[in-house]
Structure formats: structure tokens, C-alpha cells
Image 1 (cartoon, helix red, strand yellow):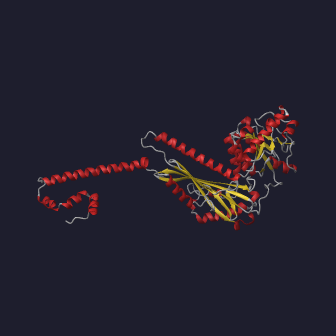
Image 2 (cartoon, rainbow, N blue to C red):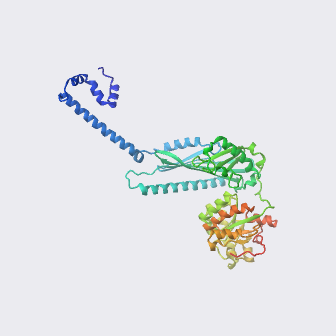
Image 3 (cartoon, rainbow, N blue to C red):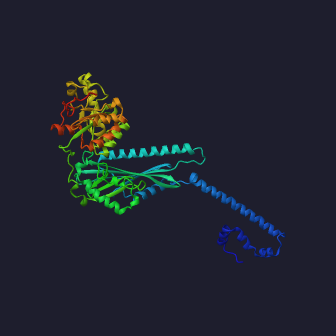
Length: 530
């Protein structure tokens, strides 16, 4: 038998050592055939011993390989071996993302950790206020993601931590954000988030979400759609979007609630951006398509929208011929309960007036910024809920001035109205405050009942709410729960939800004046006291 080259011989040994041994000694095979089973030569015995050793080594190697395969996911394998690998993947993912309309120059930042990593893509903004607002929303999204990831691993470790091979799984958040300009004077901000978690040695997408804001180009105040679009803009967009989705997605991709999510209603078609090319509408995961299909974005060109997009932003649109009501909330900023209220107002494009206590402003600055950005009116409720009527002139002025400065420091604007705690007021209070004084028409007594159903019934049982000012407090979960029922009910009944200054302006014919007191339109019953 001819011998192979060294390289070929090595490969053959690796594949079948016994075969190579046999190939090197053809005469032994011939002799073996002539012997009886009981007759073994010394060479034969030696050969069998070597073969057994080789087989034993192979068995050991096979066992080690099997154990390695089992251990790899728990001990050896990491989805991202280092920061460079994560950055390369993040860059690749951002190149694939087409949820937000393309922008020009973009900046990407990375925050890598072996178990939690975040990548952010954004376009630099020359608007400092907008950049501050955007960065705050980004921080909130990132903090929420990190908290959930840590909690998940904490629970997992409690369950599997006693195992020698436990290690935390990787969690990744991608944030894509952009600002869009339009010739109308409005500016749009969009923030898209995409979460991944490690599963079976792969990074699997587990969630995606998009949020949008439409601002006045100068004041950074949230614009009501009526200020930018004509009333038919949803109908115009709806027809095109339905057709687009039907043509681009199969029937089995739509969620059971998909058809309802495309109805022309206030809670639908409320996530969008506007630029000179037209509009892009967004639907979150599970709204139109089945959960897991991800966020859906549909571009609707300027030509299709036509005159449904106004040529320029108009002052907040309120129809003076339709009924209106002012929701007001005292004693904030109010933490999680107030955030729920603000989320509800945002969902229905509604506004309210928040009367804040100065000594709580610093700790609740995020809520204050959000309320202001939504177009809500910010009011002064004294520094520490003092009974102003019992104070002297200088003390009253101090209560009002300190609160005004605290609010101004956060949003760059002072409160426009004030409400005395307990409704305790006098001529001295109004003169010292030197601001329009706002009382109320309907007191829900939420602070007393702490019952969402009772709060809700207190409002809906009022026969005519047109021109009324409703009093609640943003500290209580029950008030937030009641708000979540009240806002859609008011809208269904045809009420426009406005700020107190807007209500006074449209009902009295002039803006509220400093030193004057307002409580909304009172019918036969006098307003209750707080």
C-alpha cells in the first residue's frame, strides 16, 4: 500500500485511527485470516491493546465535547463578546431601521455593559428647549428599561443563582430619535425604542414602541391637532392607510383588534410626525398587526393630505359654539398618579390646568415639564398650602413669588393663574397675589372619598357642564382612575376640554385679569367649598 503525504495521513488518523493502523500492516490482515479464533500472535495482542487505548481516548473526548456543548450557553457563550462587537451590531441595526423617516446627519452613542447595553441614534438639535425635553424622555426610557432588566435578572438569579454555572443574560435597548421641521411652523419629535433579550444564545426582539410630539416651533408648547390640521385629516389619512396595510400585509398578520384601531377616532391616528414631505403615522406593536410584528409606520404624502394640513399653525383651536369644560388639579406635582392623568390627557389630545405647590416643584419637575409640553396651563397653589387669608401681605406675596420662581426655573415660564388653598381668599389675598384667582364650580371631593366611582359620578351627574371648572387633586390614584373614565366620557358628550384661561376668555369675552376672581359659570347651585 502506498503511503499518503503527511497532511493526508493526519486527516485519515483523525477520521478513523483503526483504519489507518490496518492500512499500515496489510500482511497482518492476511495472517489473521489463516489463524483460528483462539490463536493470537504477539503482534495481534499488541495491536488490540493500542486499539482499545485509542477507543478509550475517543470516548473521553466525546464525553468532554458533550459536556462543553451543554456548558457553552451557561458559562462560555456571550452574545456580545466585547464592546466593539456590540457597536458593530448596533451600527448594523440602525442601518436596517426604517421606522422613522430618514434624516441627514445622525449621531450614535453607545453604553456597553456585559449584561445591559444601550445604543442611541439622534440628530443634533439647535433648539435647546427641545433638546432638553428629548433628552429627558430618553433618560426616562433608558431608566425604565434598566430597572426592568435588573428586576428580571434578580428574579432569575433567585431561581437559578444557586447553580454554579449561573450568569446574567444580556439585555439591549436601541433608541432612535429625530426632529422634523415643517413649513407650517410646527416641529415634530419622534422616539422609537426596540428591546432585545438573550434567548438560546440569540438576541431576540421582545418589545418595540414609538412616541411622538408636535410642538410650536418657537415656544415648545404641545400643539393640538386642530391647530395644524383641518378637521378631516384623520378621514383623509385613514382611507390611504387602510389600503396600504391591506396591500402590504397578509390577512393573518392583522390583530383581532386591528380593524378597531383603524377607525376614525381620537385615540387612533394620534402618533405621527409632520415634515415638508407630508406625514408619517405610527401604530404600536399589537395595535394593527399581531403582537410581535412590531411597530408599523405609514408615510402619507403631502399631495394625498392636500388641504387637510394647514398652511401655518393657528392659535389653539377652540370652537366657541361648542360646550367646553376645564379640568383642574391641585396640590401637585403628584408623582405616579399625576403621570397617569397626563398620559390620559395626551391620549385624547385634551388639556387641563395644574395648580402646583412651590415646595413640591423641584421633586416633581418631570411632571411639570410634561404637563407644560402637553399644552396644559400651570397655576400657582402657594408654596406650602398655607391658608393665605390668615397671612399678612408680605407673607402672601412670599408664598406666591417663591412658587412662581420655582416653576419658572423648570419650564422658563411663570404660572399664569393662582388658586388659594382651601378656597380661603379675600381682597387682600387677590391684591397681594396680583394674579387671576381661580376657584371652581364642581368639587369632586376626591380628597375625602378617595373613591374613583364617586369622583366620576360627582361630575357626570351635573346636568350642564358647559363653562364649569371641575376640581380634583393629582395626588391620588383614585383621581387618576376617575380621570381615565371622565375624559373619554366628556369627549363623547361633545365637551371641549380647555384650560381655565381659555374657558374664561371664551365665556366672558376677555382674558382673565390679575386681582379678579373666577369660578366658572354657576347655574342655580352655588359651588361647594373645598
